[in-house]
Length: 257
Image (spheres, rainbow, N blue to C red):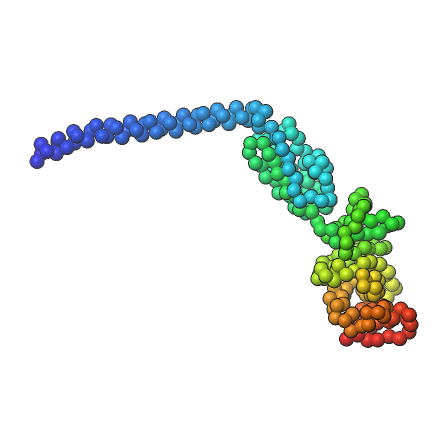
């Protein structure tokens, strides 16, 4: 029995040596792989191949690609290894009309910038020029619009400040189908109401209201006009209750439930 055990151990020695040799070979292959990988990375980082070749901008409408790339500080000669995604995003967010920026690096040499801008809520009329009004209350006076989107409200006599901010908030609280039915909103402050407005609707009616309760009452506009004769236009007063006054008489008033 003892002799049999000794023979079995001797038989295993070549197998143990073979296993050790294979492990050593695997280590050598791994070390060589890491070595050559480092060489390739170093060579790539020092070569023109690591320079930014493509800068792609997505989601922008207010600013052009050229403006955003210039503001970002990126150039096509920059080394992609030295590009800081955080710095690029911070520089672009200095534009007040930009809400959010996400920067992605796609190897070997592409940078993708995803921009989210503040929404355009309306357009302000100033001397027959039209300027976008953003959701953050900014009026883009350097972005005169050549074309105004269909069914977008046009504001008159507004300026940046509390009244405009309140107006934007109220418009955002309204269903889109009601906002799309508004043609013009005129800011006419009174001694008794510094937030008074007059609206001209696409269907021919006029609405007198106050900004602070505008969305609360205007949401019933479809129900209100359904009770009126569509051929008889006039003013719908939503300041206190709901009243209708026809244009042609301007005397007879009808309370609308």
